[in-house]
Length: 196
Image (cartoon, rainbow, N blue to C red; front, side, top):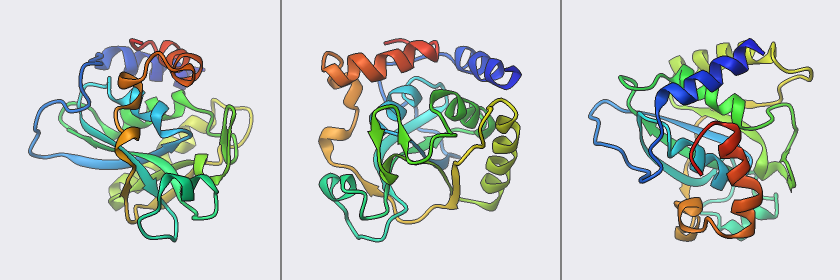
């Protein structure tokens, strides 16, 4: 419980800015790619985190080059729906980003989140550097204390990132009234203490 309280405090202390997915042009940025179920949900949360410079929905971890959403949705390409997060480590640490990650989805759920089933919805951290790998593994071990079931989150070196189709980008802000946004994404934002 302590770790989840830290995550909530982190979310609230980082501030919220739901107006844009790009905040500033930091020169010394880092990139982490996260899979936490549907990328629309992940994007909607991290768009509001101060220190996140940009966030892009896409696909990673599979074997097919330039996969389409339809191909990924079959679960046969091996890709996960992911959010590529570019952040300014002077404003937000990777530890804080990962604290948010553990809080916004169920990392003990194998290959599904809520009503979304398939390997494309798996929980995953794709690291860019060995330092990120170390931080991710430490964060996972700390988060594991807060769950009654084992965490099944994949921690792998980032591979080729494929940008998802345009209509997937900035999805929640552009489609707030759609049923999925109202029934799935908005409650997730409320739970995280963020603006709908």
